Amino acid sequence: GAVWITHAADLPAADVAILQQFAETGKEVLVSPFSGLPAPVVASAWGKQLQLDSVTDPRLAQFVGYFDDGPQTPEIDTPCAQGTDATD
Image (cartoon, rainbow, N blue to C red; front, side, top):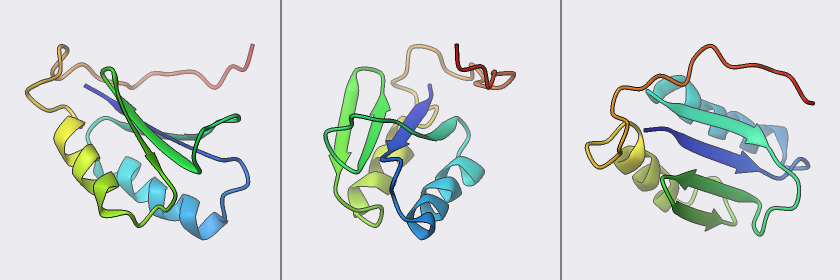
């Protein structure tokens, strides 16, 4: 199961770097900017969503730790590799 962490496009670069750490150390974690978010950072996984005002909110690490290819996900060990950077 994957975790998708989206962030406001104008999030400071230092904050984006913190989010990228989750993608670099997680098994199935994706990070990308997204417009129109209800909060500066939103983590999503399998019908669950966590809206955060700060990248240092400890709930983000808990969310990622629980949902990143966890046993509760319906597609365990399904990779999120071989994606595309296409925009249309």
